[in-house]
Length: 369
Image 1 (tube, one colour):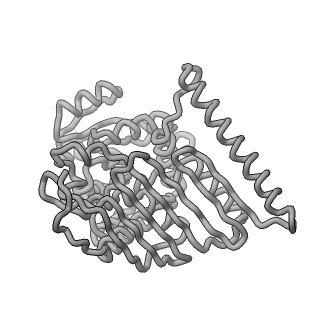
Image 2: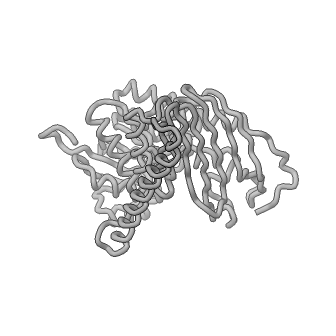
Image 3: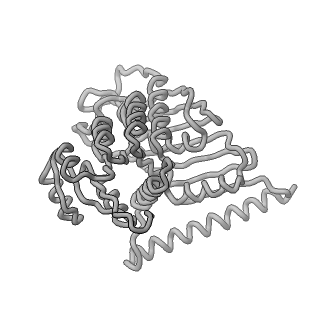
């Protein structure tokens, strides 16, 4: 990944929550890197994580990490409310930074970090790993081949199973304010919308199915938003607390349409074809053959993983690995990554527009959970 003779980049992890394991797993697979340190305010937790993953240095404050270890890159893997300030401190110390989603809580924080990165000459990226799922990468190959023509509309449906929603107490950050759940989960579908259509310029959002949580906060289970974007229009529907966890994307272009099932790793593309009455038959046969081939490949991979003949397929591990690979390739080539600070800022601005336009549902009588 890096030029011959160049020493390995020293990488540190800030935070040892659940997302830290996919990060360190992905980093182990990338050439030219060395994970030298982990930092967490809970030092015993950090020590246990370091011992499990063979990381030589452990710190419990960011100051102590940056001074002696002097990492080249820091992955900020803290809770969302603690992203902006540590990322800024790392940039000021001359370290490149990769932040977990969401980039920050407010657009102003995103702009400040972008400015600081530019002034410090450091690279700044965000782990929008849904852009790097295998099915989305296959779809982007179709876009690069111009198969769909200009994209005009994107529709996303996101259903999220949340056992914690029905299991009080509701102490997690995402339950502390009604807006937080949008920042916790919204960047996944919004990163796709912004990548395909550009920044969201206007949003009209309705919220439904309010619940009163054990902490007294109102929680909206259903969100529906219509958006104007730089290069087209989009719709986003999110259901929190669904019995089924799924994410699907429908893309309409001038020359065809595509359906992406990110949960099942299936892509279906319907194109305009130079046939008249045979069009429907030809299209159906082509799409059916492609879907069968994808499903067969996925099943074969899962069976081999279950049998221990290959590494089990874990969607998060695969997408995080591809996301980190893109970030470090961009760093080596001195260019912005796909999930750049600019892109991630547009995602947070879209969250802000959605929240600002959300209907203020009558909260009286909302059922308690």
